Image (tube, rainbow, N blue to C red; front, side):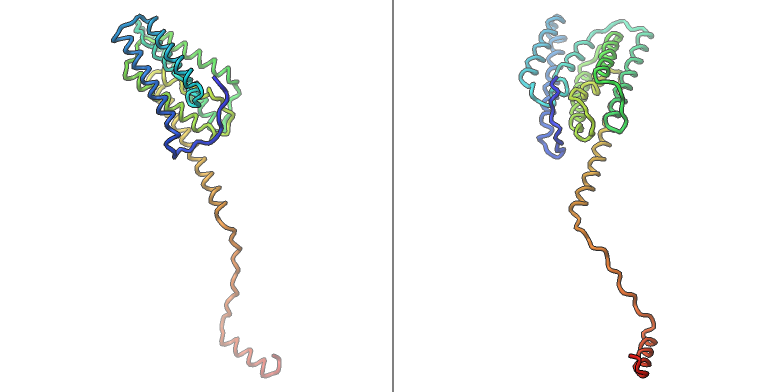
Length: 263
């Protein structure tokens, strides 16, 4: 993936900001539909479905390789990989299911901790390639121990959610003031395509809440800065002279002074 990316802030109020996200999500949905159609309607051999999927992913990446959101989300590669590796039902024992759940929980906790690290002042000292390696290990372990195949509707919802969350991470990247690589969105949101339902819900809540807080804090900071720039310099108020108490007594004193030639 290309590490070159624009650090310009995105305008959340513009409709054009979300058009690439909608296009990427629609293409991913079409890819999922084609894979399921080849697997369960036409019933092509798995090797043929794999070849069709790789060809579609390659052509899509070749034609839209310059799109910023596509690069950050890994194009359609991770989506196709998640679909193809989770369509085999196997006999599942209790121990196998427990191991899978533990792997999914660890993967979700690891990704959530990284999300918190990149949106707050907390910092982790692990290099990026170590984090990516751990993510690959968790993904491989999940596929090894998984038993059930994902349904079409669940796969479609997971794919849509993955690209929406990836886009949220990319849009909020300039707000975090962290040296975050382009592919961070990929490994932060990858568990959404794989993990069990409960870790999935936890990961989604962490990503949404932390980035919503990031947007809110930056909005408040910029609103305060604009208010200070627009407000004119107001001079310090002049303290009015103290009113003279007992005006009659004061007038009598002035008259007495004039009578004695003191004024």
